[in-house]
Image (cartoon, rainbow, N blue to C red; front, side, top):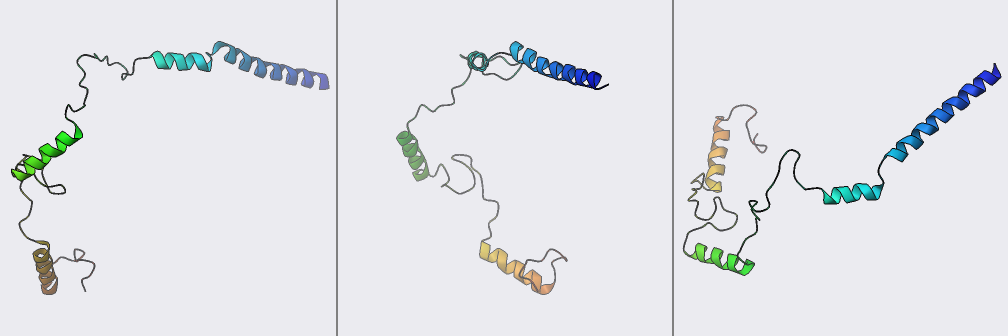
Length: 126
């Protein structure tokens, strides 16, 4: 009985180690995988790209030229300053003509009059 148990344990150990050896022998080395990945085309699966038709995405202007063009556009009122809505030449209009102080005053008056629905009051309201 003990010999049967010992033989089955040895057979199981041999089977486990032999699977690992066979799996490692059939897999490519790290250098082969790196060489294959390096030579592969960098395109999404199923999509072919043509090098001649792909846009480069780089500007032909230098940084100094872009800065000068932006400054000239702002002087000619063709664009908007940084941090304001819209982009150069878009003609975008601001969303509101009221100032922040005016909005705060109307909100405060509405809170005093109780015209603001429950749960909508500002954090400073009583």
